[in-house]
Image (cartoon, rainbow, N blue to C red; front, side, top):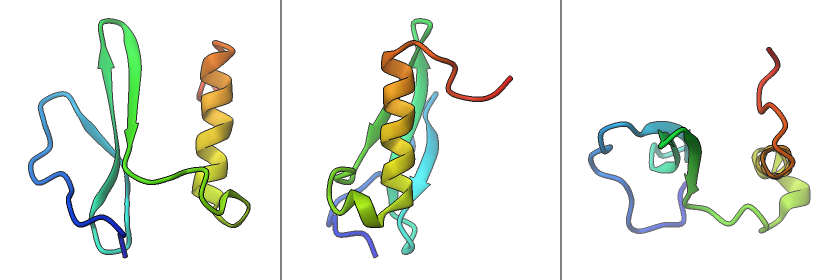
Length: 74
């Protein structure tokens, strides 16, 4: 279950769902804006990161993005 009492009701144009909680609440969205990638999350990826594989993946991808490395294998 999401711990959030608010969430995305209608996904905006150009946004893609990247993660949902088990109850269906959207927890992450992405978009391409002006040639760059945007990722927005509605969870605390630092919270219990050692127990949460999704948060571990988030931080790995964030590190790659900051180093300007490809986020997906080509």
